[in-house]
Amino acid sequence: MIGKQDIVHFFDLEAEASAERWEAVMRLPLNDRIRRRKAIDSVFLDREFSGMSEDNYRLFRVSFSVNLSDFKEGECLVLHKEDTIAGIKCRLYGFDGDDRIVLEVYPSEVPSDIESFYDEPLVLDKDKVDLRSNVYRPFVATLPDSEYFWNNLILNSGKLPEFENADGCERQLDETIVDFGLSLLSKQREAILKSMSAKDYYLIQGPPGTGKSFVLGMIMFEEMYYHRHNVIVIGPNHLAINNAMEQLLKLHPASCGNMLKVGQSYNAPTLSMDSDGMEVGIRNFLRYSHRLNNLFEDNGENWLVGLTPHSLYTSRARGLECDTLIIDEAGQMTIPLALMGMIKARKVIFSGDHKQLPPIVSAEGVSDDMCKSAFQMLISEGNCTMLDTSFRMCGPICDFVSELFYDGELKAIRRDASDRIICGDPLYSFDAPIVLKEIDDEGEQASEKEAAFIADTIAGFLAHGLPASDIAVLSPFRAQAAAVRRAIRHNPAISEVDRDQITSDTIDKMQGQEREVIIYSLTSGNIDYMKEMADFLYNPNKMNVAFSRAKSKLIIVGSLSKLARLDLPDYPHIAKMLTYSLCRIH
Image (cartoon, rainbow, N blue to C red; front, side, top):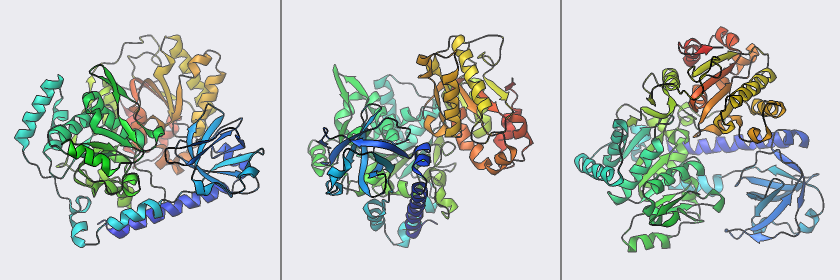
């Protein structure tokens, strides 16, 4: 059973592991940190730039010649001189072209000797982050100590959802369908009705391309306008939160006045829609004030607010509670993060897929249960609807993914293979939707042989008239993604314009995206390394995400004969992949 001390222990272990990783990186020579994309050197402060952020923090701008880092907006950094790590603690506020970054600095962090930082080369490194004192301890302080609370928590009790007013919910949904001119598949309808009539909680499992986001938009609409509920939407990141909120905006643009996002402007939703001849979008606020809450209440209106779970325990939205909480991408949410939102609501809708990307838990010593997502911890036959029809994948690819990862329960709405490219070569012809290509190599985290073959294959697709933007290459390692990009750059048959439109990245970066053609590079061909790294290389969740990005063509490249020789009883999907009857071995 999960208890309060488990939550505290989880946060402590994760913070300590994060600190250890940061310290290990900072012990590396600067050139190694740059090569690992963790630092930028030869950085110069711009004397001519000044400004203030929405938070009334100081803004500084820095310039540099080369940026190989993986820095993201909102990330905590430290700007320092080359001979010391002590410097200016800051946050990446925004990119200003390819050679400049704007940094946000809390006023007290501006050093008294700021003048000494100008006119000399500086270094920008990632900073150590520990959210325990500012976020996690305030959250833990709100958790009850009583056994009654923890025994009855749905994560512990195994209690199935309770339902009410099913007939009324069905009549209301039928009205909405008519009003918006919609049609629903049976499982979509079931998921919406169960979520509407649930008194306490419900789960929706959305395998790849099954319209989970559309279903969420319908649920948000009914919660606000039928149940008259105030709704909070959370997720593992701002992208997931924005995507969920934008589904309601697409369905009912007039809802824009009752929706708002909380957070920095660089994380704001960007979608705009036409509503009665006006362009409308989702308003973004730095903080949710109770003045806004009172404004909605005075007008007799309900609201929907999107934010990160952390915001509920900081000045962004401290004290905010709701009738209904929606957790999107709940399969990626750790139990503590999900619980941060759950205790703020009377009813919780979990939307996700525990068979795609899992939560990121990096600390050793975390219990098996605490490594699970809240979605995986809860899912059972009686509390979840699985959306079972994919609108993305053609029939043969969907059947392949379904057999490997969903026990044959997922089907495609588009049963036939695409006829966009039909030719005599199964490598390119779309009537051979799944191709396995043997490339024997001894690489570990990069394979130049696979990269060269992939670049030549891409050139072939371009010659057949396929747009470059319809192709993506995925691999387990950043080093292989970079090797493929180099091979593409050096391939004379691929133009510079096309190069910029071809994606080559790791699996995690493609969650939520799709392409006509996906080429998956297995990369590793050293059999000892393949055994040692099997849990990473052949993780079913990651392979599911990779394969299911493909709409019409999936090509799997690697040392397949070596893979077949491995004894992998914990990875049955590998044997299924290698023996699947509809795969073409090229």
